[in-house]
Length: 89
Image (cartoon, rainbow, N blue to C red; front, side, top):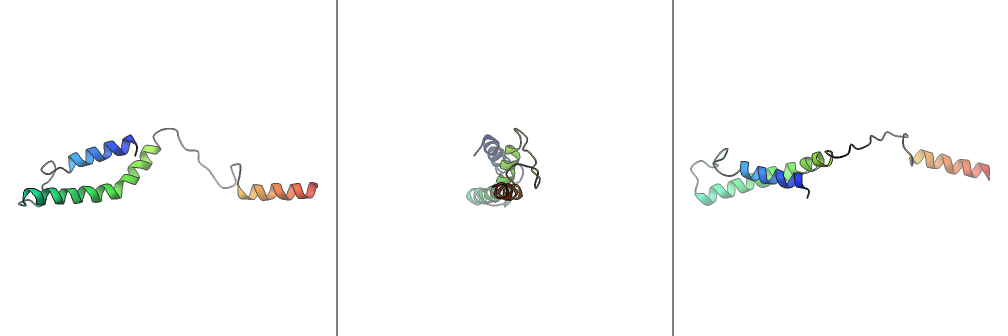
């Protein structure tokens, strides 16, 4: 994990603490409310942590945009180089 995902998990946990935003179920017992909030936290974190991870990876250096045939090592270039070597021999 990286720090962005760690902070995201901490903030999400705080926000989903019972009675911060909502209490589910409203008239439930202490353990029922805690269990429901734990399940809600787990579901939200499960479906969003990869998105947060990807956002955090893009915060540093920008990633180069690679277009087909525009960078060294393209499959087509390797085949062309091999054909040129065979012809020159």
